[in-house]
Length: 248
Length: 259
Ligand SMILES: Nc1ncnc2c1ncn2[C@@H]1O[C@H](COP(=O)(O)OP(=O)(O)O)[C@@H](O)[C@H]1O
Ligand SMILES: [Mg+2]
Image 1 (tube, helix red, strand yellow):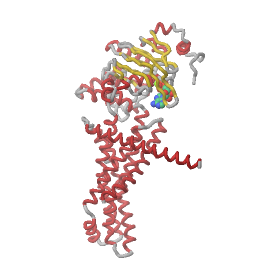
Image 2 (cartoon, helix red, strand yellow):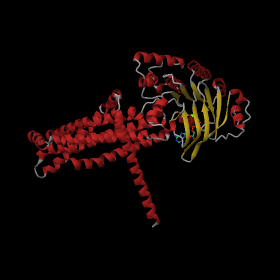
Image 3 (cartoon, chains in turn yellow, orange):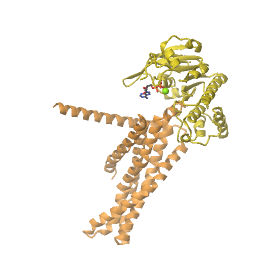
Image 4 (cartoon, helix red, strand yellow):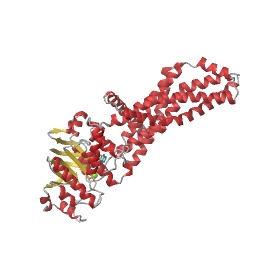
């Protein structure tokens, strides 16, 4: 379980998170929605200790990670896999070395074994046979899927997805959604997904949370969210220009 | 009055921010030392950096070393000719190269080639979140990115300096003996008489220190990049300028201590 308690975070004079409270439940998929530039990625980075809050606590399985030193924090991070918004593949390594990286770093598996895992993860994301390509030779959508394969390599217990389907075609979007659902069910993992895609949200989310002006303003099961009277949620789901969400 | 106090204020701020930066670079150095002794050492990454810093710099080092030796021979020949001491050209070239110009020129060339690349590469990794990705996978970026670059630079700079010294002396020999017809025997004899192995060794110690400076500054600037592509450009420029200045200043103090 991940609990974010009264998180405040500013960059310079810009307040991004403003007293945010959120609980991520185990073994379920929580989808976080909100406008671009609203702080969703910042929120996700707090969950894994990449950013520290100005004040507030981030509790992962009972441990407040804002107070941990490097070593303890690394132990907590081993529970996680993360897909970055722009994939963040190592561009000095080919696809195979990228996906194999956490395995080489944290396991004593043999090379042949690692190659087999990499092959299997890559075909799971619909990219068989790209092992020897460099990240610069891939399209944005392909990079994202390689990033997904790397996030899944260690079979983590908690997976953070930063916009896994943004920029993919509808068929690929569907395939990635299926992959997230399947991974979540089969391994009973905890997923946190940031998404803009209204279709995907309801398909994969057990719980949906809406981030608005630095706080979670709506939180609930998809059925409840659909019936929500909150004007922010209304506007977001309808994709309307009219409402409290400003375009700037 | 007011203007003076504003100027003093700005000066004070500039000094403070420089001191603060020095402190941060020293902290990075300390954490590099810590991660260097913590196994496992990333040997493959170190070799890769050695190739990048060392092998790929040989061409520029050969070129700059040779021509520096040649111009030294030419200049000192014009000077020494005035009191018929042409036979000292060889030892002058050899002493200047081993003590000063070999290490300093090599370090400046490698700064331009490899130090800048370190800042650009790490800077790009920072702004594209590859460094965050390392943290997320519980892999320490200092160990993976910075230790190999610093170890490789400290190790390769002395080797490149030997190449530069040698080529400089060969260049000096070519200009002195072949073009200016200085007696070959006295040219060589004076080199062996006036140049000690200590001159060479001290030059190589300098080179190792310069290797540390250029890699540490390059990594520091890259590692702390922010602000997209523009930020990467800024980090690269700052790395080259700061490294070059630091190399030249520390050269004076190293010389004062050693010779
Ligand atoms: N490391 C940082 N330094 C300064 N500002 C940042 C940093 N990370 C994010 N921001 C700012 O915080 C705001 C929220 O960003 P982000 O979380 O990426 O939004 P999104 O909801 O689209 O993922 C943006 O205005 C961004 O400029
Ligand atoms: Mg984002």
